[in-house]
Image: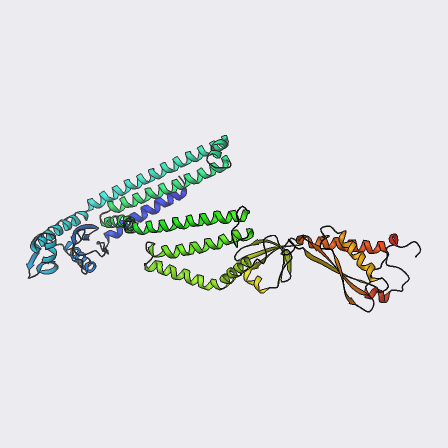
Length: 538
């Protein structure tokens, strides 16, 4: 047996002995109960206890808690009277009831109307109470005898031994089950594990070990609970605690059961509303999934908008469903539920400003058709491909394979360029700028640039590439070559190949590509044309 078990049992034994010693001291022997507020005439009544045991019941609901407390105080005072005798309990009649007296001091009153509800007179009811008090006091005195305490301690020791035996048995069974699981795991349970949905025998064995540990813990807790219940019942002056534990265990179950019976209609209403909402969402999802796959055309819904539109509709349907079923949720009108609702509302209010802005931004981007997943876009100074777009966030993968996340509220506030929007149909224009000296005819430059563009992969022949002369500078002319392509996602690679083709084409034609500084500082003795491309005569 493990050390923690010894420590736990020692602690339980010490607590039990301390409870017995404390009960023998001059501490209150009466359990003061806070009975529930029930209607007048409830046949269950309210128990008045002495030393943890019920003496009689009160049936008056007006000020019943105070009445029970006063009755228990009087009952304890009577029981502690060393000269107690039943003859000292007498009655005194009045107009509306009967007083109960002890040593000529008034200790209780029986109303005629309350006794009548029980089908008897006030005098008869007073006699019943006096008889019950005598029995309770006699039993109280019997429990104070030394032989009763010795008997209680012996029974407590026996219960402790039974607890030790039960816990030891649970541990032995657990060890044997764990050994069986280990042996089975080593032998291999591949077929059985796959049949039960586990990927391997080791995973099945791990699951079984966790299940057995949980069962062991629950059994030990249950056995300990029974032991404490028996221990409190055995010790006379702590017997009331045992009844209290039972009440604490049964009251929540009774509360839940009564609440369930009262809320059957509301639960059916909630189930029907949730069922209708699920059916509606299932139908909408089926339609929009077909629209997303392209097998169904819905007016105003493109393929790329179908799934985001379903997310928005689902959110709206769930919100409406919650609003409809909220009043029917059991306990929704309670103070605790309302406090939780206020707390959730406060949290939503504090975080709703930015969240709502991002949500609205996502809806604007979705329904405005600004982009779709896979498009090459530029947001602010970041250029990349859209890899994910939700109602709150947009993520780009840059040309350097970096993942950049934008809040949709910020996307609307940034400059936004979509290179792929028109590239799919008309083609996006790629352009680059070079400067050529005045000594080269512009028509030749146009021809060389156009041929370089047409030799570039993914550049379209139609529409044809074209050249614009953008400026006439001091030493050179600026030419801008423009070419169409459908591959917006390959723009850097296409531009790189275009630059290579321009260099090769101009070198083959013997045309220098000069910069202003180089043109101003060179001595003119050496051409910039590569040696292998230079004309033989020059």
